[in-house]
Image 1 (cartoon, rainbow, N blue to C red):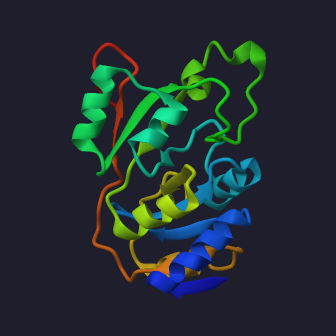
Image 2: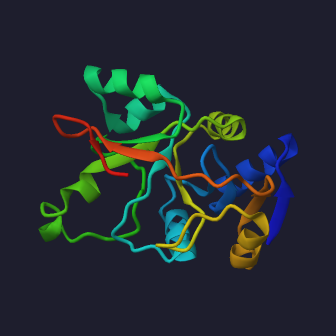
Length: 202
């Protein structure tokens, strides 16, 4: 276990950990979150194991800016207006994934025969630009999407007390960035923009 107080010095440690294929636990503009390099399938799998999350549930990603979002998702003019209105902020949007993009948001191996039945799991991607100074600088420095999800055991409430987080996840080989206890907050709003009308999912 490695616990470091949130500071500029912590930035270097977080960058190094992510590049080594490790999971980083840090505060966000909503709740404490797990972060991992979205281009590293093994690291994404570590988050599923930590959270005991079903492999069938894809993970959202943080991006540094609109250009990075456009590089991994199909965004038309109408969708762009919505995204620019709400980003950066506590809003996650589901978009059509661009083909061939090496961004891993699920650890589940989906048989080809079943892909048409669960197209949403393999053909879309949930993206957000966070409004959090440390995270924004981290994303700019690492210059790649980061898989992210709230810190908790799957189907339990997000954790806001740092000592509870350390007690639950501290035995694992992860970097925990301590910003103290966070005010109780809900995870981001999730809206699907792939249909004719925006559809709120959470």
